[in-house]
Length: 228
Image 1 (cartoon, one colour):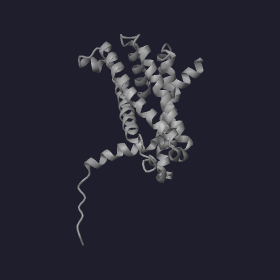
Image 2: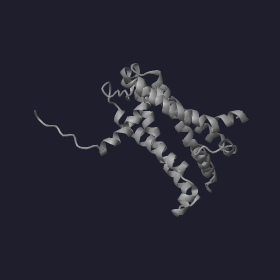
Image 3: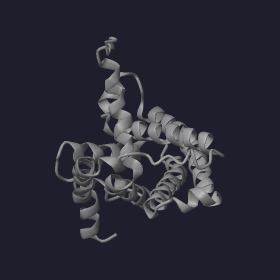
Image 4: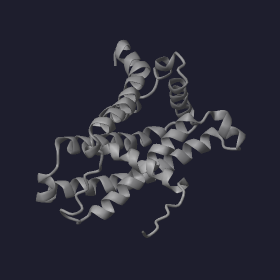
């Protein structure tokens, strides 16, 4: 990867991806609220939908938050909790492998269902295929990278990746330099992962916002209904 491309992908592209993710989601909600849905195909054919959907959602949501916490937690924080870098690395490998395989199983079931069921395939849009296949590639690279992680049991590489993420979210310079010595499989995994945020507003993935928004209902007052 050339120096200019490296700088672009690891110092500029994260902000482009997040900007498109946020502003694109707002524009989609403002201009296309009737398209703000998951486009469930349950009524067309149940088949493996329940198993596939549950495994996929459990896996991908858990992976998102474990990545978020793992990357953005400074070493000083988990060291203060008595967790060593080596133990955190081992835990990340085990948990990541389990959640990744759960997500992969669900994703393969959903892909097979979408391809093998004529009515579901006929109603599938190009964006549906792009989304599922793109997630499959990102997920596969993440699982393969576990083999590389096992060669860095001291957790030093994990600290480097976390340092990069923390530089990005705190708008500090030098983020691209931090990624200079990181193995290529991680770099490709991260670039394709960030691209998911770019395509997010233009696909059915936007329904994720509704899932998070529904949590607000837990704090709402009771609705009183009185007869006339």
